Image 1 (cartoon, rainbow, N blue to C red):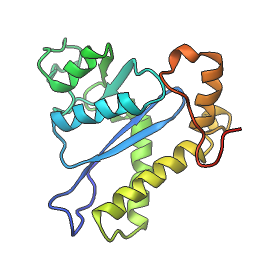
Image 2 (cartoon, one colour):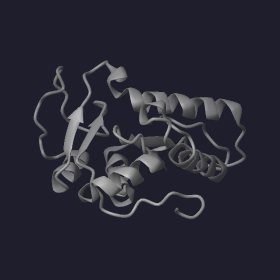
Image 3 (cartoon, rainbow, N blue to C red):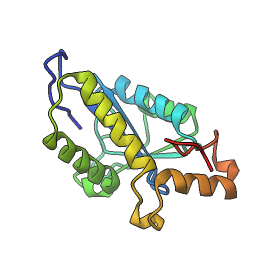
Image 4 (cartoon, rainbow, N blue to C red):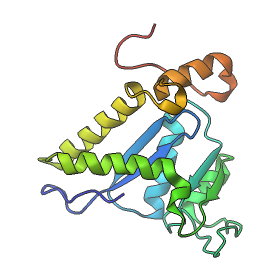
Length: 182
């Protein structure tokens, strides 16, 4: 998602968003561009920061994510695209949504709608202010907003419960922040 141009920034930023389909846990990052290297850098940070093992990613068919341009989206990766290479290096299955069907990636589309609402209702004095606001919203979403599909638990509460049952799915401890763990 393109972000508004800030007076102190040389160009518009681009918001990359990842949502775990099972827990609704969100990771986001503002990048200076929407390039294959920027997408690769985002995925690399996601792999480092996610408390669980990332095994699959679903993206749209943008050139920042893939060089597979078949109409059905089913063509095999060429092995040359930086995003696809990073997926292969980490054993991550990279799936593409059907072309011209953004609703297939509905969770990200809905989250981007929330971000659009946030951007419409606030004024930002700088790029840093915008980034801080987005980070705060990510924290609020993951730690404070209960999700109906999760029995009104937050994404982090859900991850903590699953970590007790299936520690093999996780690569690091899930902490419920802000505030001390119970």
